[in-house]
Length: 504
Image (cartoon, rainbow, N blue to C red):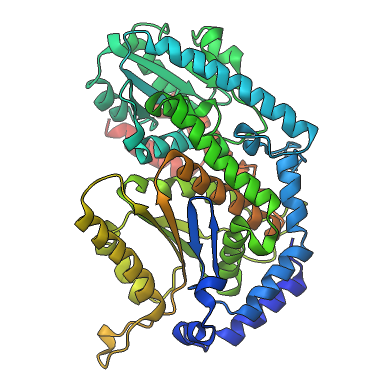
């Protein structure tokens, strides 16, 4: 992790740069466009509009090296116990390739290959039957990754199955989905590591009753006993492991619904794209490492510049769910206030992440990005070659992407203060050659590794999520009160329950 001396040095750089307008900073370094850009496979990333200069960047790279970032990345891939609070490795990279060199990583990769073989067999069996619609039931990491990928890769759907997602425990979601489907042509996948997730069990029960039994239900779980008790035959249960957190699990059998949507070959290409990024992140030095750069700039913006939020702005409608996916990946991983050793983190950690798809969001919150009091660092993401033939639309979309990043950085002076744009708003711009399974895999893997980079620099554990549990525990205790079988101990909750029950 970074030391107090590192934080002080970065703070001095931020103070030194504070009075310098970003356009002037950019003008001082004419080679900046190339110096602050990297290409990895299908991704070109420009960090040239980050609010930093070469001297501060060199010190940031040195601090990361002194903090052991390179060694920490190797430890992640090779199966070290990087999840210290739970005594586990974090081997999501083993789900998509053999980049890890340790025995633990190699064993995990073998298990992952065996699971994919079982996925392929179940896929083939489903394809031979009458099923046309798949309902994937899960929440959080068991839902967000597959749902994002199914939507983002809609141009690669092979047409054999239509995939739907049921996540919220609000019964209206199940009602509105199931009334559009035919139970005789529908199968369900229940995704829960513990097979004890309340939302998944409630919606799974609705689906099981609607189907008239569990004969066309599948499960992805680490708790096969509970899945079998629910009525799902062992041969229809795919594995999960404690060395993969839910938000890192798209690449496993959690992605079975995605494989059914896009086919086995395209699913393999997604894994290959992620594995390409894994190899780059493990092998490239920090000074030329895309995920390291992304994570370092995130820490710079949060701690040196004091940015409390981060925007993610994909200029491709197919990536509209990316901000929601990244909210969980980033905020659940980095939402910590103590370091791995239990001591307080001496600096702020995770920013609030939010965003949406351009150009729609230009007409909603971009006013605040351009003229609000708080500068918001942004990740802009564009796709160079679209999957449609509407060239005029795509040229306009890309022009807007480039224009917004330029306008946020450079601003525009005006005698009328209401029309003045201060500029100085930092951003990263990432371009995908095309949006394919491989490029999506590479992009998501980059974000995963960026999260780990930030965790290493802050000294926190990116792989536990104890903060998720407290509210769920209290909800379980309150459930009897909702039907009048008990009284809440908290007086405000007691009054609210009484109001709810009085209006039922």
